[in-house]
Length: 85
Image 1 (cartoon, rainbow, N blue to C red):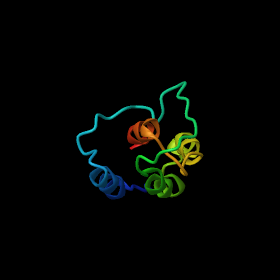
Image 2 (image 1 turned 180 degrees about the horizontal axis):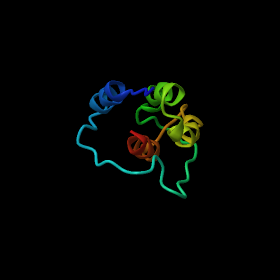
Image 3 (image 1 turned 90 degrees about the vertical axis):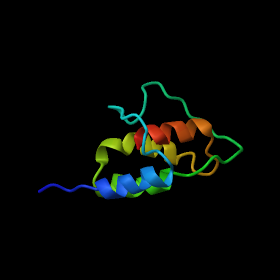
Image 4 (image 1 turned 30 degrees about the vertical axis):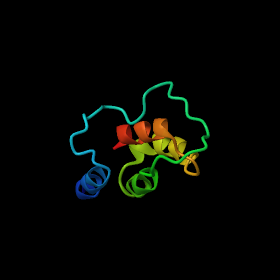
């Protein structure tokens, strides 16, 4: 049996204007450092959490790291979230 959320991920990509984003092999670059911030840049993290819990455990580490910064995401969080998508 195979589960897929291609339509869901395609919807996230479309919602955040990432249809033409370059595919990458890993969800997070090794050594990425994230820290708390004071200004919000957007939230794609919540949308990806559903995919993690349903069919994509392979991106769990990247998502759990990003989820620690849901309160005040910055541009670097946005870049890491784009990489996960």
